[in-house]
Structure formats: C-alpha cells, structure tokens
Image (cartoon, rainbow, N blue to C red; front, side, top):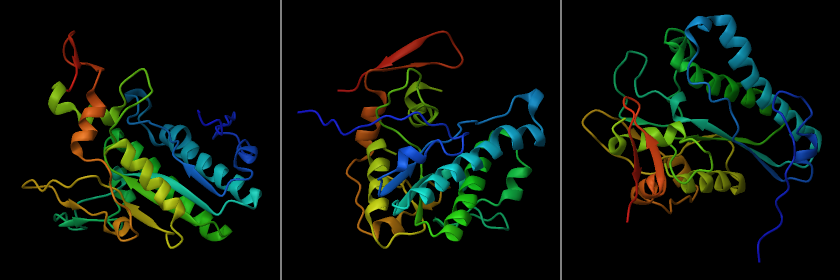
Length: 254
C-alpha cells in the first residue's frame, strides 16, 4: 500500500511567513532549496546586481525559513544543505592542503576577486553564515551538510548541472541516496550541531587533496552506495546533449 503521508504546500522563500504553516508540527526541517545562479550575465556583472538579485534573496530565504521554525515552537533541528564549492584545498599562502574538512572554508575576499561563476559559492557561504548567526541567537539546533558532486536519478526534464559534471568523462563534455541519507542522519543524531563534510568516495590522484567526512562517519553514518551505483543511476536511460555539436547520445548501462 502506498504511503499517503506526503502533504504539499505553496511557499516562497522570498515571502516572509510563507513557511509558517509548513513547519507546524515538524520536529525537523531540511532546507535544501537554493538559487542555482552559477554565473551572472555579462551586462549585469556588477556588485549591485549580484547583491540584490542573488546574495540578498539567498540570505533572506534562509532566514525566513528559520524564523518560521522559531515561530513554530516545535522544530528541534534544522539541516541545511551546503556545497563543496564553499571549501578550499589551499591554505592562506596558496599551498595545497592534504586533508580538506569542514574547517577549510573559502574566504569571502577570495571570491570577490573571482569571475562571476563564483557567485553560487558566494551566495551559499554567506547564507550559511547568516543561518548560523541566527541559529545561535535564537536557540536553533542547526547542522550544515556539505555535499560534493551530486549524482543519481533525477526528476527534472533537463539534466542537472552536477550530473553533467559527474558523467562528463562519458559524454565528452555523490550519489543522491547518500546525500539524502546523510541529511536524515544529521537530523536524527542528538550530538550533532555543526558542519560536516559529505563525500561518497575518495580518489587520490597526483594533485587532489583528500576530502574528509570523518566528522560524519564518527557519528555512525555509513554510505550504502558506491561509485558504480552513482554512475549507473546517473546515466541509465538518460539523454545528454553535447555542448559543441548537434548530436545527442543515449547512454544505457547493463
């Protein structure tokens, strides 16, 4: 028999109070929604546009949801989805870091000197910082799950950017289940109240640093899916367009 406990609500991160009804009666809240602005149009590549159209909405949306959680009086924990793009594998002198963990945050002033493609990472870290300040001031138990490249089955009509990156060796241009499980684990572990890094599998090539999920594993979290599952679910029966030509390829793995 199908589970019928799912309820749908209309809510907008841009409207304060629109999540009040959504979080009523909830013990835990998962904030996974975020603007997916990876770049800024050339004609709009200025500080004012980025601040008003990307940064401010990201911060306001996060804080509006947290305000609804405070109003509810019953939310015990909020789990926030962060991104590996907020992390750095270099120290302040530019030297490689052997092990990257939740303490290796990319400094904001470094983003200010980058091209517009860094606006996504900037909005993620600024909204996360605002969330932790608000949580500390209002007694909210907040934990941030820092995800690496996300793969797995998807519901959208277009291929998500993270999956395009994941399967690029196959198309020429981690695991969804693991990320969902990590969020659920973070909500349910009494001792968790901080950041942690999520990574499905580590590959030590000559240059890349090791991305550590020790903090999460120490709490008892175990991954149930390996790289084989990730790739299979990501490309099975999916169609990808080649960015530099007019041909398409359908990938099927057996």
